[in-house]
Image (tube, rainbow, N blue to C red; front, side, top):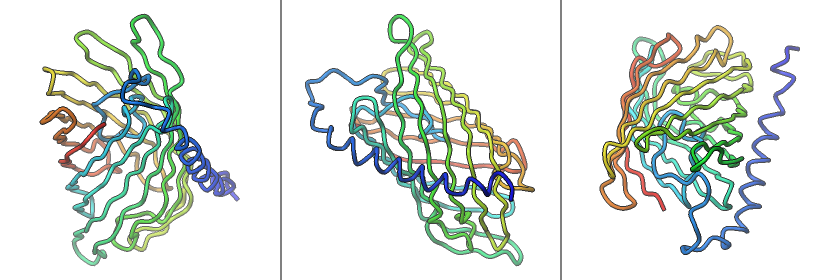
Length: 277
C-alpha cells in the first residue's frame, strides 16, 4: 500500500479539526465590538484562485456570489459559487466555498448538472512583522469534501487535506505582495467514469494587489500545483483581475485566468459581487 493510501484518514481528521475550531471560536465572537480596533491582518481585498490561502483576513464577514465560465479540456463548465468567510476570533478565520453548475462535453463523455466539491478552511494569523505592520504571516488547513457530481465532471469523489503557510508584505503606495505554499494529501477518487489514484501534491502561489485609487484594485496571481492524481498533469494558472468598490462594503470582482499547463483549464472567466463587514 502506497504512502498516499496510508494517509486516507488525514482529510477526515482535518475536517473534524476545522469544524471544532469554527464551533469553538464562535463562542468568542461577541468579544468583538464595532468600537474595537481592527483585528490584525484585516483587509477588504482578497485573491481569486487562492482566496482561502491568502494571508489577509476578513474584518468580520465576507459574502461573495461568483459565476465562473471554464473552457476546459475536454469539459466546459458553468458554475455559480458561494464563498463565505467569518472571523469569530481576532486571529482566526473560517470559511467555505461551494457551488452548483453544469458541464458541456463533446463526443461520448458524460455531462450534466449538480453540486461541486465543498472546500472548508480555517487559518490563524501568526504575527505581523516589521516596522509599520508591513508583513502578515498566517498558517492554516483546507479540506475538500467530495460533495460534487463526479459523473458530470463537477467533483472528484476524493477527500483532500491541504496544509499551508502564507504571507502578505506591504510595498510602496499601499501595494501588497502575497505568497503561499501548501502541501495537499489526496485520496483516490473518480470523475467522468475514470478512476483517480491520489498523490501528495505541492502548491505555490504568488500574487500582487495594486490599488489605483480608494475604490479600484488590480489583482494578479500565478498559482501552480503538481499533479494531484497519477497520470494527471500539473495545474499552473495565470490570473488578472479587478476589484471595484461600488459602496463602502460592496465590491464588484472580475478576473480572467489562463491555463499554462495541460492539467489546467484553457481559460476561466470569473465575475462576482462581494459584501464585506
